[in-house]
Amino acid sequence: MLSTEEQTTLNDLRWHWDDAYLIDCRQGSWVAAPKGDPFAIITRDSAADLRMAIRDDYAKRAGQRTAGGCSS
Image 1 (cartoon, rainbow, N blue to C red):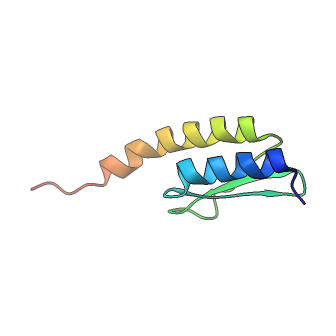
Image 2: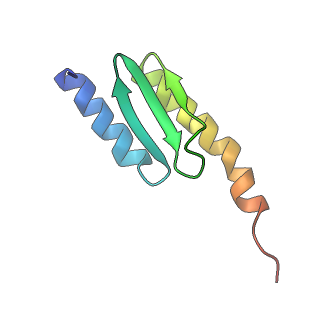
């Protein structure tokens, strides 16, 4: 069971990143999976580290999102 602080942090992460990631905290590990690539699991030992990893992953995937666009 998560502490009140952990649950608040989890809710905050989900609120900010819910459109792009599935986020959870399981057995002391913070976990995120990009919705477009659910097998690319990101795990960290703290919420702060997971937040940074999500930001990095999202930025890295930004090029992939725009590179695949159609041209007219």
